[in-house]
Length: 244
Image 1 (cartoon, rainbow, N blue to C red):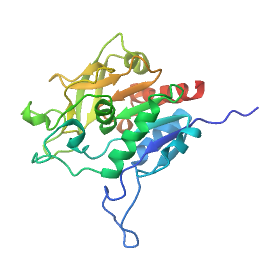
Image 2: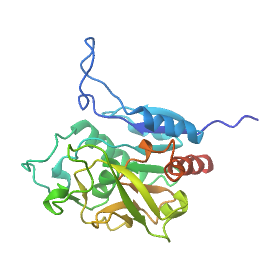
Image 3: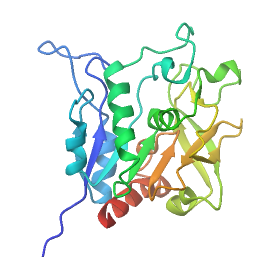
Image 4: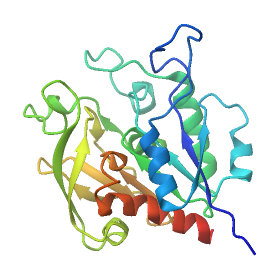
């Protein structure tokens, strides 16, 4: 008997979140290929999930696991942030609405493991009643989470030894790629902070009451091909999806 490969849904950017680079179409539903690569290396089959889907419940009938990806800032209205903050990036209404509605449905689906990455972790925290630090340099002027141009940088993260995350990555110290200007402020009551950056910023969350709601603030897909601890996150998602 041939066992099917786990089908992993990867949420996309909103239709206008990424600037078009060719002349024939203006809008795109897209996601960085590195997410797909990491899923394939782990033994899963990737399926892109376009934002704005009104019947997202149909996804849950066929998917074995889901990845909430990085992207633009959430609309601050969802956590009582400042809509006029000068560093607030343009929100994606269809993406916010789709991901928050999908998360509500996933809370009752213990059989679908979910990996939340960067923006994904922030969406999870807000959806479950937490809030965000709207701009890290407001609290930490020496921002270690982005480079001088606002792009990728590498930073160390310390992981709680008694966490699921430490078990999954098989380590408690990781060198991560990050590029975020927002972060977790108040952790949602249902979640547990299980990793921190040197400046105290929360770098990972877990839901102790869900078999696999695992969230990281950094971007494991960027180094997963060469860093086993980061590929382990995707491998664990596939294992959980296979068991569900």
